[in-house]
Length: 256
Ligand code: 0L1
Ligand code: MG
Image 1: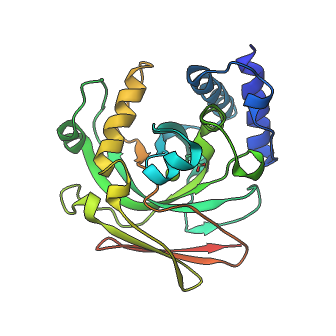
Image 2 (image 1 turned 135 degrees about the vertical axis):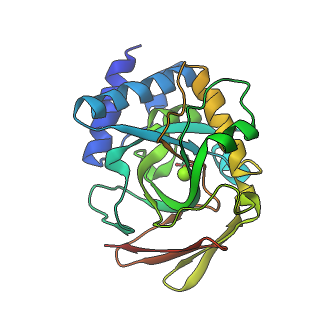
């Protein structure tokens, strides 16, 4: 099975923002390991073209999302410099059917590696936590995929934004932080940090464990998006999305 060819196909569709048939419909027997290999190979193409790895993201971290895909495990993807928004403004150009979800991001000042990692290790390596949003944009038709498809598509990663204000990791009980997401003034989604594997720090533990299986780590300076706190909502031209993180400020996102 030519994983490199599949990676090139996915890269083409990601960069051209063109929908794709599920790869599992055309390639029998692809495993989760194959899917991560495809993800890695497509990321290498970005890096060969001048992009830079700046962190990782966890996905499928809530029970609701896992149920919707019919799995009981979280997944991860790569974060590239080109995905980071400088301002909370999303242009629909270059996106297919984008959705936004509120997240807590961690930024690290020490290397984190190893399968025996604990939440304590994570706290000691955390420089700060930052309210954030992620724009996910599956390249698959109708946002419909299997676990293997979505991993190969870099866990639907498209863009992300970190708020201007960072916080000490000890300042808030992150599982208790409530989030209200409004579209054009109407409440659309509510949730709390506990939706992310019980506590966002657990998402980092899981991220490090998964990376250590392939000999990788969270490096100093990297950012990690821990996972959606609410359901992701579709965004449309002219939408104003406000995301309030209890005690941590509000992000106002405009879409054009
Ligand atoms: O960030 C995420 O949780 C996305 C993971 C992939 C599933 C999806 O696209 O909803
Ligand atoms: Mg996400």
